[in-house]
Amino acid sequence: MSLSEAQIVLLAERVDAAALNRAPIAKLTNEFPEMDWQDAYAIQDALKARIEARGQDCSALFKAGLTSRAKMVQMGVNEPVFGFLQPRGQIANGGEVAASTYIHPRVEAEIAVRLKRPLRGPGCHVGEVLAAIGEVMVALEVIDSRYENFNFDLKSVIADNTSAAGWVLGEPVPYAPGMDLAHCGIVLRLNGKIVSTVAGSAVLGHPALPVAMLANLIARDGREIPAGALILTGGASAAVAVKAGDKVDLAIQGLGSLSVSFT
Ligand code: OOG
Ligand code: MG
Image (cartoon, rainbow, N blue to C red; front, side, top):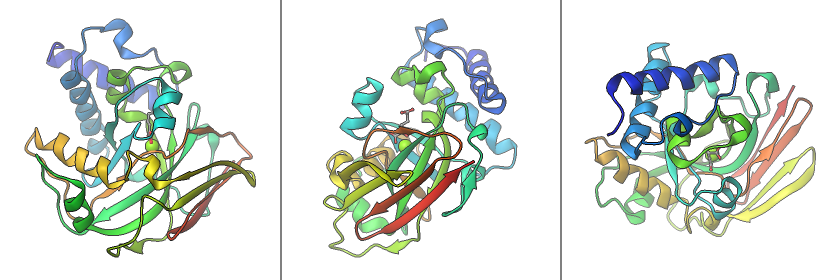
C-alpha cells in the first residue's frame, strides 16, 4: 500500500459523493499517481463499508468487469476487475428507470450465476465453479463511471467499484451439467435494433472463469464467495450508451430474455 488509511477514507468519500450527487470527478490517479492495486481495492472496500452503513447489504452481490476483449478495447485496458452490486441498484425485469438516476449510463449484456455452494480460493478453477453454480440468468448491467467522460485507468476504476450502478435479471434457469454457457448466442437490442450479437465465450473463453478469478482474488483476504451469491460475469460485448426514451432488450440462447426502459 502506498496511500495512508486517511487517504483511503478520503478517496472513498470522494467517489461516493460523486455517485450520490451525480457529479463526475477526475480519475483518482491524476492526483495520486502512486496508488497501487491494494490501495485501489482498499478504496473500494471503504466505499462498500459506507454503502453498507446505509443499510445496503452487498455481501453476496458480486460483479466482474472488463472480461471480454470488446470491453477491454472499448476502455483501453487489458485486465479484468472485480466489484460489488448494491441491492438498491436492482431494476425489475420489464421495469423502468429514470436516466437521470445516473451520470452517463451505459448498458452491458451479461450472464449472471447464482451459487448453490461457496467457492474458496486460491486454486479455484472453472470445474469447481461449474459444480457450484445453482442457477444462471440473463443479466443487464447499467454501468455509470463516476469519472468524467468514462476516462479511467484500472486502479481508478477499481476504486470506483468498477462503474457499478444498476442491474436487471431475467428469470433464473436451473444450471444443468452440459448447459453450454460458452456457445450460447447473446443478442442486445436498443429500441428494437440489434446493437450486438456475441457468444458467451466472449467472456474470457467461458463466463465461469471470471467467477474462479474472483474467488482467487478475495482469498487473499481470507474471504470466500458464499453460497447463494449472485455474480455478474462481465459485459460480453461493448457497452452501449442509453438515454431517456430508450428501451433495451437482451436475449440469451437457452436462458431467456429481459427488457428495461429508461425514462
Ligand atoms: C468498467 C466496468 C466494466 C464490464 O462488465 O465490463 C464492466 C467500465 O467499463 O466502466 O462492468
Ligand atoms: Mg458489467
